[in-house]
Structures are given as structure tokens and as C-alpha cells.
Length: 293
Image (cartoon, rainbow, N blue to C red; front, top):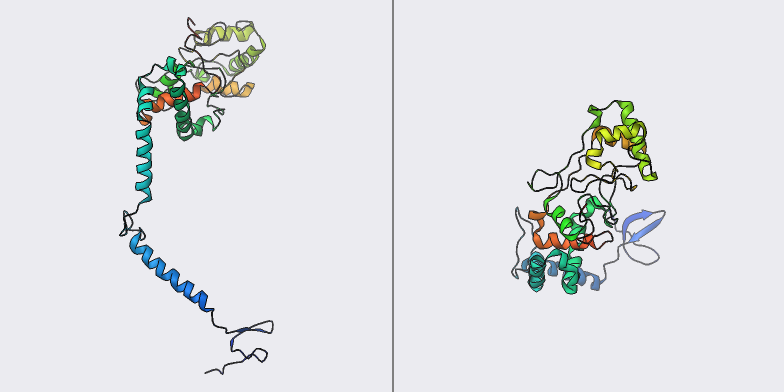
């Protein structure tokens, strides 16, 4: 058994550990610290008895108090839904075109729709609805399927080119790589790229290709047809890129973007709310905006 070593300066027993000639003193812990330590142990035992603490296979122990943060959140959500029940029902019962005239209901719809958008739509369209390559910008006034409240709500409700909803909006651009020669596609892409600059859609070799292969959907004026989801090719707004290489790829492959049908996932009130939110972002149209097109 080793002999206890006493520090000659302080007269205190050391632990025997030494670093660079400095020995560690074996001082007892302060009594206040020990009582605090013991108190935390007692508190921990009491907490485990009263509150949920030990994880089990499917759940945690409930504790004597039966406290549950999830239950509290669920109760708060239920209370909020009950408080807004009349507004939600009013949103469902109100004609979409008349919604902006009801200031309180419209304000509620935009606020609720913003939450729905951030949760379900921002992953593709961006947190600010600015879109991305292959995902439409919802801030401008270019709408493939119409930008009125009713038209936006229909698009949200049924989606685009999905196989889950028989009422989904549907259009399909052919993959012209199986139809045209490579040089013809390049000529057509160069022609289409020049349309926003004012080029006659039917002029020259590119115009001939356009008339034979594209005009049936995009129109002889290249202004598009929103009833079939064909974009305007003269407005310099491009979903898949505006450079010639991107247009060659688009013409060759034929894009086929899909949007889910949100009607059953969200419910009618949420569909209408997010439609109201998107509509007021800056590009929303009145019901009469494109009548007769």
C-alpha cells in the first residue's frame, strides 16, 4: 500500500497525479455542490415517476400525471380549427370569383393558403414562388392553364399529367427526336429562340418546320394555347431554358412535367386557400382576362 503524500506547501493530501511538477490536491468537493448533485438525482427520479420518460417499443412510459406535449398540440390545433370553422366553411361555399370582394374571408384564405404553400408547394416552386428550371414561376402573368382563381384552384385540385386523378390537366409534347432529323431540330430550335425578338413564326426554313410540327398546338402566331397547356413562345418566358442547346433538348426529348393532384390530400378549403394565395402573388388574372381566346 502506497504511502499518502502530503503537499509541503498547503499540508493537504495529494492524489498522486503530477503534471509538469505540479501535484493535484485531494481537496473534498464543496458541500453546496454535493447537495446540489444529490438534489438533481432526487429530482430526476421524481420526474421519471411523474412525466413520460422511458422509451418503450411503441411509446414511452406515460407517468403518473399523464402529461403529453403531443396531446397538448393536438388540442390547440383542434381549438384553432374550431375557431376558424365558420371561415373555412365560408371559403368552401363562396364562389372563387367573388372571394376578393369579401375582405375578411379573402384575408383568411391568403393567410391559410400561405401556410399550405410553404408546406406543400415550395419544394418545387420555391419558398418565394419564383419557380426553377422545369417548375413554373408563379409570380409572373404567364399561365399555361389559366390564372384566374377558378383555374388555379382547378389545377391545384386535380394536378397536371398525373395518373391519380382522371380530371388532371393533360397535354403532351411529342419527342421530336423520333420524328425530325438532328439538323432540322437545330434549325427549329434556333428559329424558336428568335421568336421573342419578333421573328415571324412562319418565316424561313425554321418557320416551315414550325408550321408543320408546332403550330397545331402553339398556334401559327406562336402565342400558345392555354386550353391544351401549350406555352406562348414569343414572351421570353422559358420553363426548360432559353438557349439553343436547352431548346434542342426540349424539342428532342419532349418535356413531361407532372404535378400531383392535391384535392384529396388537402381538402377543398385548403385548395381554395392556396389558390387565393397564389393568385394574389402578382400574376393572378380576373375571370374575364382571357375570355374568347
